Image 1: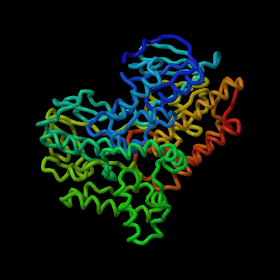
Image 2: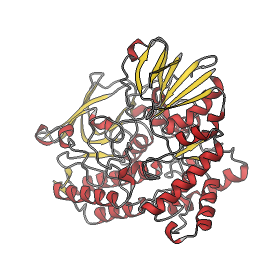
Image 3: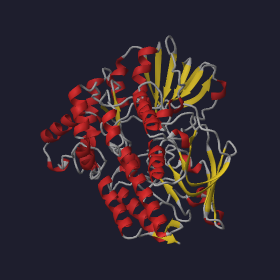
Image 4: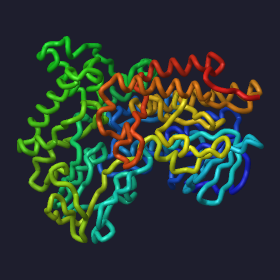
Length: 538
């Protein structure tokens, strides 16, 4: 489908930044209310995360029946998922179907990156600027920029001299890459590395994996859905989604409610084995004390260590692949297909960067620990500037011209992850301080979009011009987010949850760990109490 033509100038009720799950649903909801909306999307197509991340093996870690919109019964019944865990291509096809099904494209401007947004206190409008020269005026600005949308750019010495091809998993060539007969290096073993390494190993002549930090990863147990599973996914969808909205993570698999510290070793092993067999993110719900108690957490470490040593033939390699030095769950649990088994292949070599750090990149390879590894291509699976990267890449200015970069200099501050004090009528979809990346993102996205659009509808009905987070309410929420995070073991890990993967980024635990259900309840209470914690100006 062709992109819509640029408007250059104009006034809209709302500007939405991003055309992934969040931006597309926001557009749909705001249009239902009769608002004029302009969506700006940097990519050449809709889909957000699933437009950009096309690397080999790219797949969602939430089951397909749970990772879809709930707002339309017709949409639910006319789309059929083919696998338990949807691959990137199927998710992108789904999102394109949504765009066509609800005629969204006419209000989405592709190939357009928002460079700045300034609140004009005289007119009480936002002025939004793009890299294409657009200057748009809007009453409301909604940032649906995604939590994992700004890739970390590698800065290794000598990279500019490398004679081979380089790729980043988050900006993979749409036509794909053929590694047949090539010597390939993959740098990074987070989720994108863990998903792509097995497939690259099958194709490449030689694969060298450079690992900084080993990760906990659980077999996906992926399979094609049969007709009965597809039918049940539709018939039980509403029931399962209602349940998911009240859980800790927004997933439909019930937690056991058991305590590892009050279970015998045999009981613990049985629970872990069952969760391992179920696959995916089921492991999060194994024991209620697993993320808050060191002794309980250690039992998960022990279980994973044993599993890795079972799968990897070389004990030395298995030990290198075993996570150490941070709590289980401190880094997002990965979901894989034959990841650990891949290191049994003759054409795969693991380099432990703690023992052999990368020194430089040469025209023909990578020097680590004094050894040069000859490679023809390098794949950077080096992650993202999570949660704040896309927002801080824009020049966003609120009252008195104060920049968001200045406001968040010591780390992100929000009220409910939805709004920022000093930035009236600007809303965030799954922003810092909300469950966001520690949840089923679709459940969290829908909850945020529904809350924001309901608020806008109330504002307009009541003649309220501006809605702005109160600084005291924001302070209290930030303190609560930090208190909840500090009651767990998770902030002890050097993860992207705390921005530890980005040099100079303030260390603060960004997702809210109070749970999807309690968080939703709090948001509903705020709305019911005439938006308690917000300043409303007529």
